Amino acid sequence: MTCFPWPLSSLPSPHQDDNWGETTTAITGTSEHSISQEDIARISKDMDDSVGLDCKRYLGLTLAAFLGLLVFLTPIAFILLPPILWRDELEPCGTICEGLFISVSFKLLILLIGTWALFFRRQRADVPRIFVFRALLLVLIFLFVVSYWLFYGVRILDSRDRNYQGIVQYAVSLVDALLFIHYLAIVLLELRQLQPMFTLQVVRSTDGESRFYSLGHLSIQRAALVVLENYYKDFTIYNPNLLTASKFRAAKHMAGLKVYNVDGPSNNATGQSRAMIAAAARRRDSSHNELYYEEAEHERRVKKRKARLVVAVEEAFIHIQRLQAEEQQKAPGEVMDPREAAQAIFPSMARALQKYLRTTRQQHYHSMESILQHLAFCITNSMTPKAFLERYLSAGPTLQYDKDRWLSTQWRLVSDEAVTNGLRDGIVFVLKCLDFSLVVNVKKIPFIVLSEEFIDPKSHKFVLRLQSETSV
Image (cartoon, rainbow, N blue to C red; front, side, top):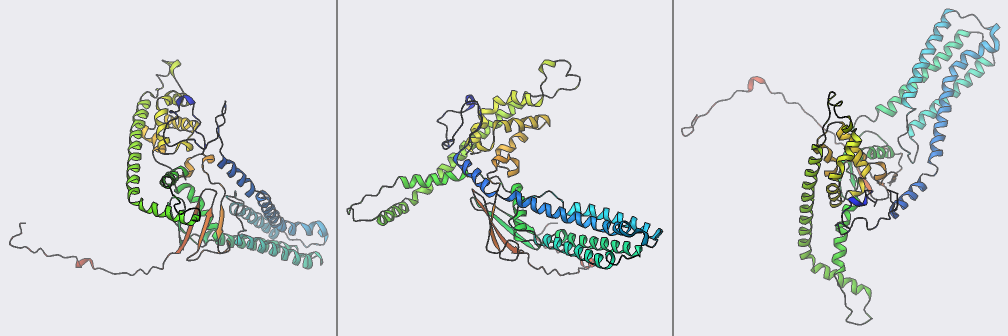
């Protein structure tokens, strides 16, 4: 949990409900932040998991940059080495070579732009294994360039070939082959995965919230990346406080049970546990009534505090009025920017908003600074009170909140098969973070047989049948 950094003067009484802040270690004084044992464990876990990731990332980037530099300098070296080493022995080439020079220049420019667009992208995530197709393409390019260099060294450098036009055409053939390899890379890395072939059901382990996604031919680790990217925008943010109510209810029921050992100390703990289970079973008939009334009371309190919050926000927004250009000269002392206007009207709604967030257990996701920023944003864009309250009345996706409130930044991929294998029907893999996990079940999209049936438009003719008791 994270301490709600609002001024102490605006906090409700310490007897407020929901036992808010029991396990929070707050830093008093002028600090507005807090940290708990869960946050410390999470930070240490993230630091341990991140060891070595930077080295792996920069090593791969260095190898790719070195190979790309070798690819682009090789055709230029093929053309420049003969004039440098044996210029006087070369046969004149003339206009043909000049045209080939222009062709090589533009092809290298196109290859450079295509390579930059396809390969040199900002890395979205660190994966446990290499991308197989990309590694195969890099190996293919390396072997291809090395074979061209071997042929060039044996047939041209050693023999000092005098046919300069043939040497330039040899360099042009290398550039053409590199362009075809780039086309192959586009097919394997981009086009192959576009057609949906599988449906992935993603279920969050804590609350059972689920989503469905359609993917093409991808490896397990790349499918996991797609699932996580969609998780942050599709799933509502994980709120562990919503799960504490049921645990507290079960603990309260078990705490009310007392076991007496009437047979003496010879009776073991197994008998006591069986007695407790039997007593809990006898109380099962009355526990559902308690659950019903607890939920009804909670819903009543939420509706009551929601109504108070809506009224408070609407009354606060009434005091804000955008000045026209000619009115701004009349009262310069009363003109405020959006930030100042937000700070001016926030105290009138702060208490109602804080009570509602505590009741719905959302207080650790919204700091006072984030609320003021959102309020200033709504005032700047002339939004209504309903638009301002939408963020707080219902839980939104994870991306809607600050990154330090996400509770899930590093994940572990658990799979029975190698993560470089492709998706297939029936595969189940799990994405785990510190607080919860996402269970992903892969199903193949069925083959659909679609037939055609022709209906003659002239066959649409009808007859009106009248009965004696029917009035028309």
